[in-house]
Length: 156
Image (cartoon, rainbow, N blue to C red; front, side):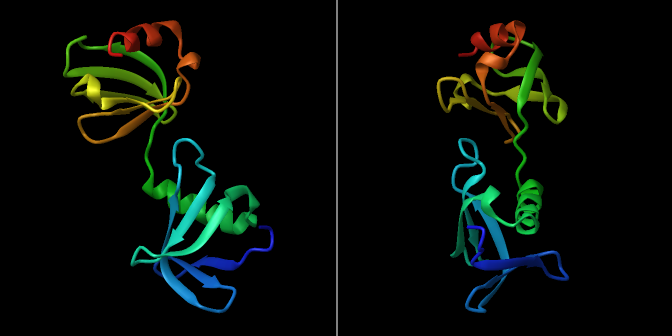
């Protein structure tokens, strides 16, 4: 898709504006990932303020760099899914419990209400929802250190 079927820019209010190849203008478009965890750079939809798709992107890497950067910046401002790199400790093995974490965004604290808030996405990938609604991702269980896996195993 190197020959992009649309142009994308920000208006004076900071909103994304898509201009289609036929000249049709869509103000306030929002990028939405089809598979935000499993394939974050593949299958993105640009939807207008009414929620209707106005463009489809097979792969973010196929876009011209300027358009890709606009989309990535918009997604980053709306998506917040820290990745757990290490579990330093848990307050209790009974729920609710407070977890001390190191994430790709720094140190964090997670309050786990119950084991049902740990969702297995694949054999090695987990999504953990904390009491405040923040989703924490463990992209690959096998990359966690032994201490972290031992603590996590008590809840699985």
